[in-house]
Amino acid sequence: MANALINIALRWLGSKVPTSLMRLKDISQVTVLVDADAPDAAEAMDKVKTWFALKGIQLIVVPVFAKKRIKAYRNTQVLMSLIPGCDWRLEYIVCRSRACFKIGRTQLPGEPFDLVVSDPAGTSYPQTEVFARMTELMEGLK
Image (cartoon, rainbow, N blue to C red; front, side, top):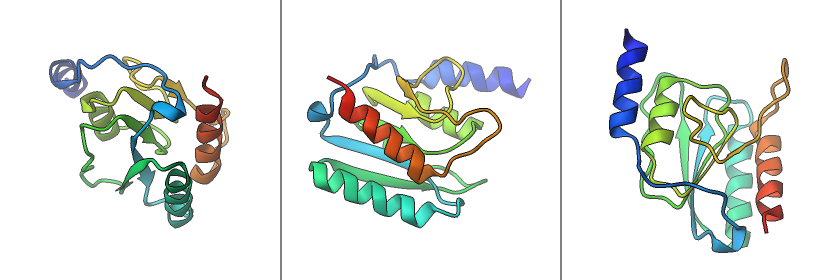
């Protein structure tokens, strides 16, 4: 019953902004969701801040803690999630976001992500490695 209510709420409250892949040179603002409970959280935040600062892109980093509310800026140009797995809080934030380009680690119901960098079955990579792969793919978009 709860799943049905969540799905109805996501359809009703979800963003209607169309999304697609974007070239790196067209990106001016990024919001990155970082798993703050992971052992490499501090290192991941540093790498994210450094990489986007070198590219001259405005950055908003949102640390995500388990069982706590996620406070993310809805009106961002790009939404990047380094959060492994899927729960209703992440799904809600991604669906509500008005970002034109959404990047994640696991495709969510309704396929809101334009680019997905997933872990192979049975393994879980640190978010620093996943971030490196995401940025490598972003740089390769022409």
